[in-house]
Image (cartoon, one colour):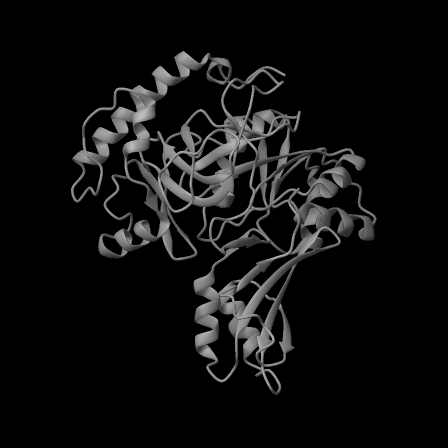
Length: 398
């Protein structure tokens, strides 16, 4: 397979020089914007100097956006769409082709002209659906804008239209395949581009056994593509449009290569520059170069969260959501969300301390606040350990 462009195989010196020039342009733009915060306008002499700039945390960004809606004073330009992610956090979509740069990921997955991509990411308020829509356009593929849910219709559409590729969360393709089997439908999907959750080895093997080559990307609504797999499945290759640092959680201090730390991303996108944006995700730098020939730094992939935030079924679950739910039911005791795996799917349970029955309204409130429907489990008062844990992720990522 040919590379997406010449940027993927440039040497370290050429990459550093190119990124430094782009970085200084976005620093200048941020510093000159009305209400710009915490970034001085002085040009950096070296990429290593980036570590001296302050880290921007999502809590900071949310506070800025409340003060200066919608983007908190960050200089967004050439806007085509306005998106809202849980928090709420607002993100722009841009008029530039492949604004989120996921075309590089689609190309690495073998998707191109002649392919029909069943895009099962949400199109409602969040940008995920549009992110993969623009990725397909970048490589010349057609799209079925399937979104989420309605699995029987999804299976029928995939069969009748002839979808050859899937884009969505890792688990949901299996649901579509099993529904198609039950309906006696034959699908042509042989490529899968997944994101929004962990791709477990057993699930990748399941897809491979069905003739589907599956690779994963690490991307966020805020900065777009961060890193992606190539078919060799040897780590995630950092995208050419960002600079990734691994720092000690809660600080801006870069850790030695190989040490697990928090992923901090600087976007070189002039239409929405985010400088040293802390994702809250954990990873580590991998040694050496990818055997596929792409020369950029590799990271080990998603290795958990620096806080208690977890992701299940493509949705983040945050401690503050559990706190909000508990505040609605002051007569109940402690609450804890538990995430496990059953049959290649995420399963959520909400453990609630109570000496009696759970209120009937709790199920709907849990769905309203968590944006997911957990199984409700009543446990005895004082049975949940008083250790501050409100989200427990029992899945294994090794």
